[in-house]
Length: 249
Ligand code: NI
Image (cartoon, protein in one colour):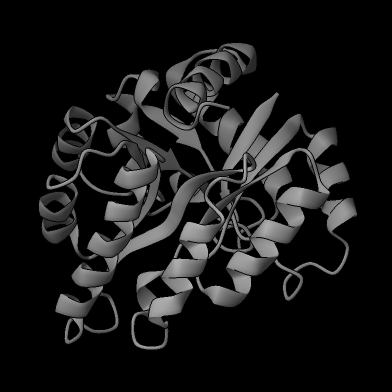
């Protein structure tokens, strides 16, 4: 059995969540970590993690919401961290793809959430896009563990994150024909990676372009098994141990 360690299962993308869970189970995916990105999605994450026993939740404010979130949204996150189904702070991070102009405010928001993670001893789920240097420097200031979600950097960057104690979240990007990620992952020990879909985004080949869902973990897993020449059972065992180490589930 596999775990989808990063997805966005919200009603605006999926009308029948029960069906999504059934599809996942048929493809050997029995758990998922649903990530919030703003006040509204955090509320949904909380609700679904209460409703379904195999959906865990992460609460956070995504960097793309840095200009619209309110201080009280962070308070609200903090108020729900004693809930046993909320197992991480995420999705949080830095994204300079569209603009760098608000980078100081992005770093401030990230630091505020890293402080919460530190205070409650929870792992973090980090989004970093075109912001590697600032991400590394900011994370180094806090004693937290976690995952670099949707990792697609170089081997050098991978080794820096690993040395800092972070796992690399690998998704459908590894199956894309123009992606260099497979070359990097070939050389990285499996003890440092976990699998994710980032549903509804980043659907793996040969389904690229369609809406993603947690069942597609199986395509990503098969791709990595071929790359590393191991069985699905071995990959499942190792990645579940990695998840246990960081998220304690
Ligand atoms: Ni995401």
